[in-house]
Length: 268
Ligand code: ADP
Ligand code: MG
Image (cartoon, rainbow, N blue to C red; front, side, top):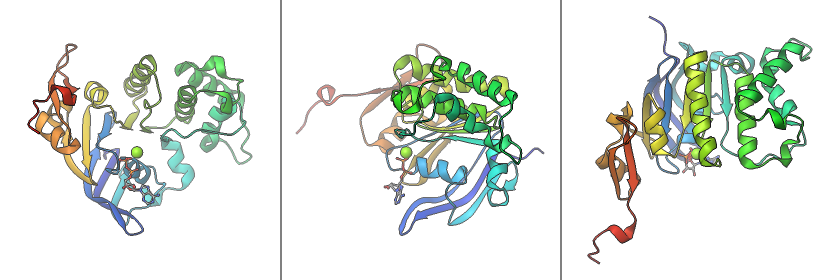
């Protein structure tokens, strides 16, 4: 049997004294769109950093394609996995093309020189994310949303088998949100890439995720397809707010509507 792309068993992680991930066990299937949701501070970014090898678990196992993550060198891991970090404002004076070309680093030879083919791949990645017109601009002169799309292009340029993204739509306008989600779906379908995304947008997660992992205070509340994970009771308990869940007019996706206080019958 083919190993799972990501297989996690009894994962425990803590930053010094604070325990953040508590005995997590789950796996991610090949060629799937896997979305991690949950309240602020529930450990989503930490989990993504552990999966990417940036943080080491305290105990438990993280296997990537059946091999313990600690057995991979940094370079061999970078060949199969790319991380698009949570939005940080970049202040380096590289051009967009240079920033995207950095994604080729794990594939370059001992001298680290880019060939014409690497530049081609970088240009295709820029085209794929719709920022080729920015190729010669400086990174620190772009808007947050433009930088975000450049980082996604860099991840694509890395030609990984797994793309990890931390809230990639957070600073994007509506058109670019849907574009990033469509892009990830396209990578999944056309390039057989497994996409693991942290998202705060439960409605987008519902429409795109093959499987969702709902995290609360470092524990798994629920895992499975959107219509199993997203239900009114679970979400209200997890997020601690009032909401409605019905079906999207687009199809059998659960749709979440937040309920403002003025709509609640007041008893206080
Ligand atoms: P999320 O991405 O779900 O909002 P995080 O994984 O960023 O959550 O954080 C989970 C918890 O770990 C939070 O309580 C946060 O304050 C804490 N935390 C995050 N990064 C660090 C760090 N570098 N050192 C100590 N605690 C941290
Ligand atoms: Mg986070």
